[in-house]
Image (cartoon, rainbow, N blue to C red):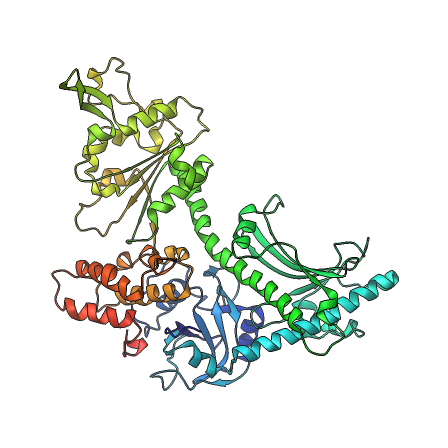
Length: 614
């Protein structure tokens, strides 16, 4: 268990003592957030966790609370009803009653009334729906909720064993007497009471579908060949937009085996090869087989074979959840791909290290229909990086030095963008060509694009936007130049770079701007401790004492070097990357050393200030 400071929030569910909403939150695995009278907008966190204004509370719940953060649902003053962890992004559902804002939650503790003895610097709850709490480590947090990892796991093992005995015995009875098959299609949360009444011998207990970190459904085949491979299932299923992951345990009566399996269903109902390869990279192969005879179902306690089956199934669930979070990155790329198709020109702007360049390549790969690793070999893709000495002759056309017969001379040549457009014009309109400009605002835009300001406009793509270029009289074929309709431009920019001028307003109108935030980039990180370090720093940077906006928050690229075979230590990252960056941030300001010292203390988790004063 990590010794790093956990991120912990108190989020009230209907107010202290409102057991109905607290129970719903626990049973539904959701955090409900009210303020239904406040219109849904993009509210900005003002840096003050004590500000009870509804818009500020919404901003904290939506943008500051992260997946993986701990949530305490309060019961009464300094007492908790239960502990959970945030497991999804923010959702707003209009016309859904008093609680239109929600996030999914994985419950960790049981539902009860827990006195919270280990919170630091807290005498009473603040009069706010959401507030940040200070715990030194996860052990103290778990201690407050009477959570013993080993004890919890043993309870899960035994509950799982009892479920297996019920499920297999019931299936065997159905096979032995087809006329007495169950009327249930599946046992799930909504019909537990009915299941408890109907299943008497063997007896079903409601806890059979509930485990400390996941829930299951028990499905029954009610007709057809009952003895084949596809008989009854224990299922964990999680949906994510148009894709779902179906994890199941199948009982094969004929073979007397249990098969632990997974698949990822796409819209066309085929297995996802990417998901299969992802799972196999963690040693989780499809069709993990367990012998019924090894489970000792006549016994009283779960043996090692039962525990191994449970661990395999749970490991599949954990890795699938992780895959779902990582998939957000490709979902973001797909979302921006759709926007690029509409707008032709898009600029990805954001803080340092947010993965803008890589995201631009993902979008390009989507547009072209290849993988990112294949882009460098594709004639439909081109990449340039602007810099202060880059000009029109590099980009469009001009006189370029040549050597002929030992003599230096000049010759009219097309620039990289003009050559790319000419190539695209030779192909059908439905064959996409993507041109990526990295660090677009580091070049002198008007000098580089020249008269193409007109042609680049989405409304003037094709021959309708043809222009006479500056050096056209030097070319044998002096036809007007245009940007074909199958050419798309993606650019990236770091707009906090003080070494570059403000982006040209005429060009700004011709691009769709999309902000890539530090929080967006967190999907690049696999390790929770890396995420924790990143969140600590970024929360501080936007506080009034530092005077920075979210544009200055640091992206996950900086923290990726904490992971992998040749990983930096957190101290090396601070000394070699972060401290020099902060020196640049605050150069010329008063109290620079005090600000950096404060950030260093927070980064290493030894800041003694109260969380609510940060």
